[in-house]
Length: 266
Ligand SMILES: [Zn+2]
Image (cartoon, rainbow, N blue to C red):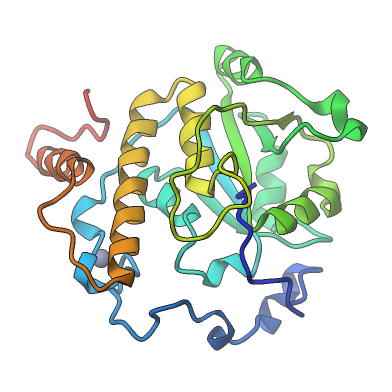
């Protein structure tokens, strides 16, 4: 439920089934502003403010599975990939309307996981499926792995994904309740309350008790946000921000022998 109001509308891309992967639209339709800039092969940011020195891994009890709209995959401003960079258990599936990704279908049946679809509770017709964050803590208490399934696309795309995917119908719906206002600067939100994908994950992880992982991801998101915005102005961020310094320090200590821990503060 990345609630962006992106200008990229729904194109003719066929999202009915996994076979439609072959009919993906050509890349050129998704050229972002500044796409002539030389980008780092790893983080995809302009080399001027490459994100790689700040990539830190963190461990979380809960997992994030992204159900990503096919169009969203092509956008360099997508923040879903930041979650995967930090939390290595993150899974990314392409959304198809009729059939789920085969691997996702199998995982949804795996009793080790307690999956929740992250979606607002603003419509009455699925009120019986709505749960609160206490359900996440209850799953943990039962030694199950809570999974936040985040619909990664524009607000309109996320709503379609939620409504049109029968394979999500049996899952509990967890609305994100947060006072956080978005800090995402790369797309214009319709409302400050509309968080981007990474911010949704940060808040869910925090509320679910994965505080250290949420903090690392929050820093990494902030560095991405600042670096990308600065690069649009062809400006190099120097000296490093506080978030950059925290991540660089963590990265240095993670690489020291005898310090394999990936969590800040552990
Ligand atoms: Zn890089």
